[in-house]
Amino acid sequence: QVQLVESGGGLVQAGGSLRLSCTASGRTLSSYAMGWFRQTPGKEREFVAAISSKGASTYYTDSVKGRFTISRDNAKNTMYLQMNSLKPEDTAVYYCSARTGALYRIKKSEYDYWGQGTRVTVSS
Image (cartoon, rainbow, N blue to C red; front, side, top):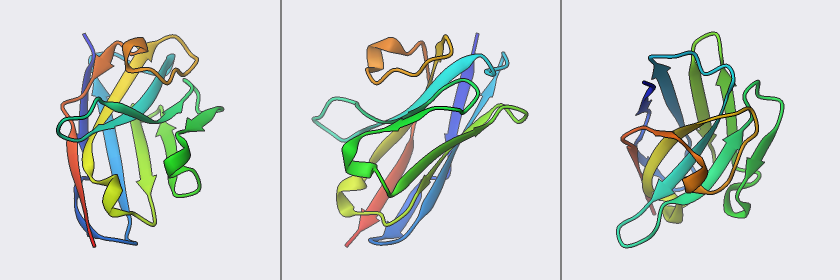
């Protein structure tokens, strides 16, 4: 069993920053690719960013490129999402995910484990 717990969400003004964290337990994730997804009411969960198992490769959806940075610290079994220049449209529940295998994927169906989400609200 792998358990993922997100933290760091909250309320922030447009243009501000937040740093989300995802800590895993139950198994080391040093061989697992990981990703961040987000979801708002009435919409499907959408891909935000992904990172390979050792952090060498990353990928971002176009809407967050240049503003968000995904990273991981395998010694702490933790993944991060640094979010800068936040916009109201970034408001969502953000979910941490992990998959067996070293390469990242961008579809939610490709991931095996999920956290319960942390809410991010960006006010204008």
